[in-house]
Image (tube, rainbow, N blue to C red; front, side):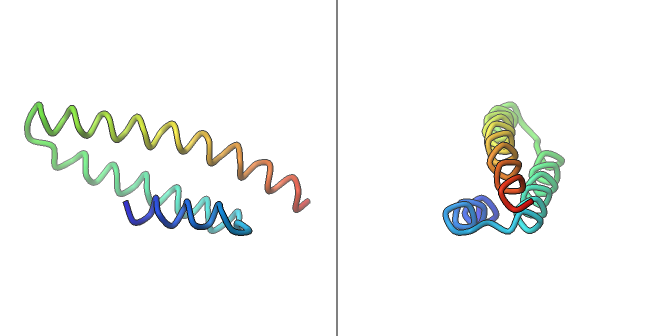
Length: 73
């Protein structure tokens, strides 16, 4: 959640593309770590929903960062 909040703040400001990509990578790592602790069906359902949401936002962030990188170049 904290990494997602950082991503949102950075996107609303002038984003540093390299730093943003590092945050996306960190969020994916944390999500994988969380997934290793799943013990029951209810937890699995919540995790799968979170994983889907993170995946969708990663795609949106990548599109925005690609546009930002093109503007810098």
